[in-house]
Image (cartoon, rainbow, N blue to C red; front, side, top):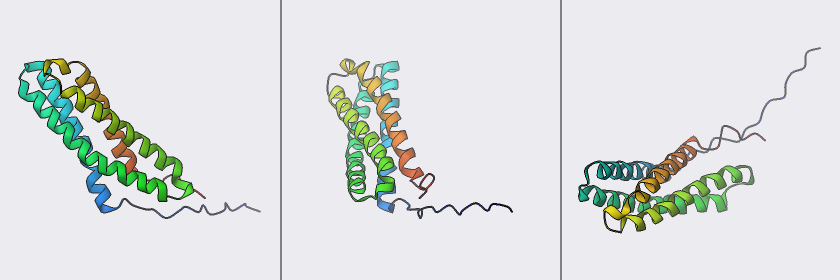
Length: 146
């Protein structure tokens, strides 16, 4: 007699809300632009590159704050099966936001005083933004098995 494996029951795929997906699309390019502006400033010493980085960081924080709020609401209302993944997503977003805020404070100093801390913070913030985007867009359907 051949044993037939039991069917695997998965939870239905729950895509991102369209507004959440739109908001999540912004932090990574903005923080990446800030990193590239910091690299350009380090290479050329033109103060305008530091100004660009400051504005890009401010934009990333503005939109990232809304994404963080949305993730917090999803974490509070999400089911127990997805709680661990939602918590990871929220913590990565929180780390991105906190380091981005510190980066904004560093970039508020004189242009040359932002180096090298601003460059390092921009790199870490951009990395956290890409991880958050990856977690957000991959969603939670791959490993959710009941």
